[in-house]
Length: 325
Image 1 (tube, rainbow, N blue to C red):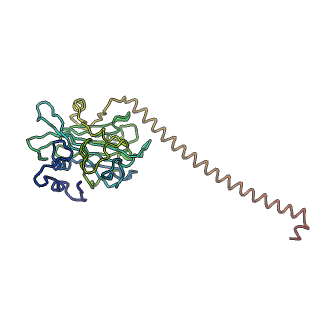
Image 2: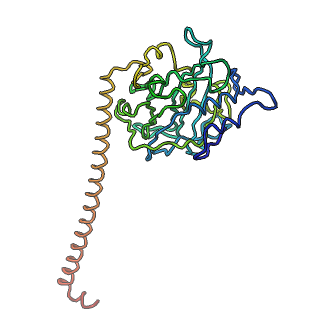
Image 3: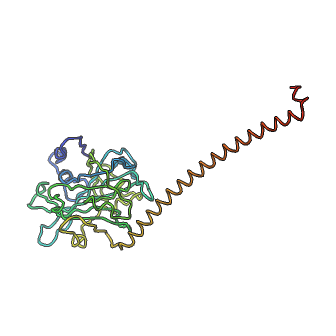
């Protein structure tokens, strides 16, 4: 784990990782030294823009050593994963794929649910031999947005188009739903739930390597928990099909599976209708409650008037009883 103090350089964290007593440490057994993985994570970490009024405040840190994801703090922790993948034709034998996970304790959209695992990934290629982070350049970026659902607007672009070859790109995270977008203009392109304004830059407090699905690191034993689909996101994103669809220009939607535009439009309308019905229901409930209160007050006043009238009538017809009192 590395703690990133506000205003401190992310690169300083690389000094905290490396060989121990001359030995190369590879905790997740993927052939890449832990220190190298951490330096890569630091070099390419995105700049996350999150809602200043998100229901869940910020990406969370989860307690280490537990098999079930359990909230420790909503403190702006980002988790990461680095692994090698076969390279394309005419390139070195392996590329690197790096995943950044912003994990939330809850999603507050329609419908809301506990725990929310979201991700942004990058394909890296070396321009020279060696495991120094400076030898690697980003080729493609991919941001998951409602991945593998009917509202899928996951998006991608070349690193050059995003000006993110030697660093991480800007990523906008939608309010309450936490979908990721490489271009803020894509934020409203799903089923109508996503909003990315107003936004603030997330101050990353921790950048933690979670290792691999079969070999977790830093106590991230909860990566395989059935409570969320995190483990399914820990496999390669940059399939041949995805790479072939990568645009040369600005980021565009590249859903993991084809979804008819009409379906998304229908769902957007349904979402708007749901919202309108929810508002109408709330207003109706408020109206009924106001009516109930007014009716109760009216009945109380009427009861008081009738009781007073009955007491006066009793005194009139029973003067003796009245004078006796």
